[in-house]
Image (cartoon, rainbow, N blue to C red):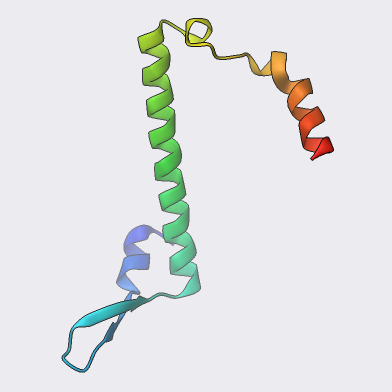
Length: 81
């Protein structure tokens, strides 16, 4: 389901004065919107990280570590936790 389709399925809860007070969504529409929000946040984090890397002059100057250098340590922590 696209976001546009999800938004078309929105139902509003109204109070006694006719004001919208809440939103009701089908679960499929809600899950679609959650996926879109997560993807948007991930993209924003990636853009920020790339900007920081460029500003620092690259991964090593930024203090970033190569995945191959830390993978074993990460795996050890995952199994210990």
